[in-house]
Image 1: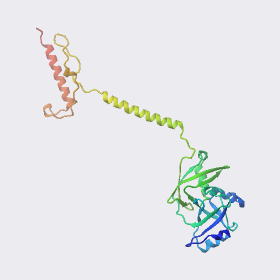
Image 2: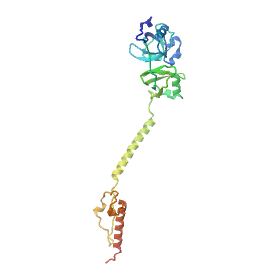
Image 3: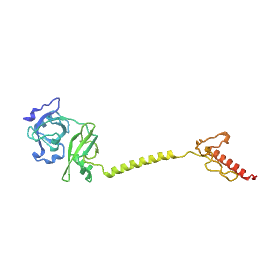
Image 4: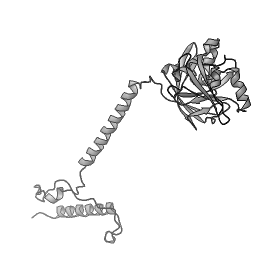
Length: 286
């Protein structure tokens, strides 16, 4: 029969079968997982090879090289045939009656998977994580690049397996696996979020510009700025040097200033100038 065209090489199981959807044997519930139905002869050969449990298989479309991984539920298929979930056949681009290769394999336990819903409708479910966890109980393994089927509330949701660790295919049986979600394929960022981000960026640029302009326009320190009067009451001529900005002295402890800082020195100079003016005003006029 067709299934006998395979060969057991190096203690591993390998065989070719013609594939058909699980609906052909009235087992539509198998669409909610990754388990297939193999013929009884496969069980006999697997038992003789002492394959470890759970039994896992690499499934390959020999025509295009596409592959995935799966488990097995029963060995009751007709000889030379395998019944598979239809979503798995779609991933492998298989039609009814196409030839597919099964090879036994072992996979590491998964530590991380990233999933991406095809539509944002999946996120409208009240508790999508719980729905996904319940669905994954029907799976034995996940393969990066596959699209798995999640059925909930009479609706079908397709979920891409974007990434898996530590390898591109992992076992999820009896393992604590971290699950992360990527944005759905039809996700569009809300306009309000875009507008808010742009307004924030624009406001920041304007604030930086205003700060630079204020720093450029800030005048230097001009001591004794203002006009003065002569003793006869007429305005004193303005000296160009009095209006020119000067460098602000740094804090100092010059011994000539009695150990005081620059603030005290300026104040002392102002007091001396005021005393000189007062003394001049008190002199009798000729």
